[in-house]
Amino acid sequence: MKPVKAHGNITRQANKKMRRERIFNIAKQLIAHKGLDEFTISELAEEAGVSTPTIHNLFGKKEDIADELVAELILSLQSVMAFKPINDPVASAEIYVNSIVSIYKGKEDFYRSAYMAAEKTGVFEDRESIDSFYKQSIKIADQCVTPALKEGFLLGNISKEILTRQLYQCHRIGRQDWVYGYIDLDQYHKQVLEAMLMVYATDASPECHKRISKKLKSI
Image 1: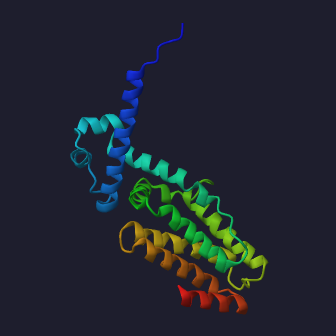
Image 2: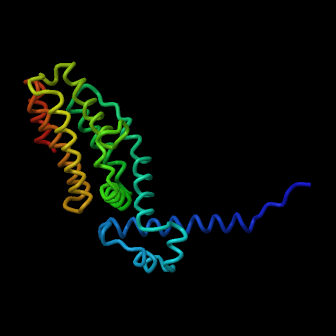
């Protein structure tokens, strides 16, 4: 005799998942527009039309929501972290920035709130562990500089370490400006791309420098 499926339980679990996702999306909006410090469980409950105990039951505390945002952020950025730049620094910079912007588009509330949570929980402060956000970001920057040096697009008059750190700073500063609402996503795209190209220009070969200058004029 086949066991009888608990259809009622399945439906309840599905409804609970849907309600949780709806409330989580509201949390993302609140954090993105007000900041993590101003975000409260009671306000989330009010906006979602549920009781505060319901929020605690579904998510736990405010810190648990922040941790969940960070976990989702790290998972969603895996494709960016796996980015394999091409040798040409002009094309590589444009492709990389475009790939990031395409990920953020349509999900700005999530990424803004998640980056705020990551900063608050100290994710960006970890610079030692091999899988830290910082180390992964530096690795990508190094992968942009190294092939450009090997192919002669960059001259090597400025150390690879300096170029790598400055490329990382281009993204860090641009991301901070966007996350906290100083610039929109289009301005973020322009700011980061310009900054990356300016870093390359400091050590570019004459021919590459001409192409960078031409690209900067067209942005």
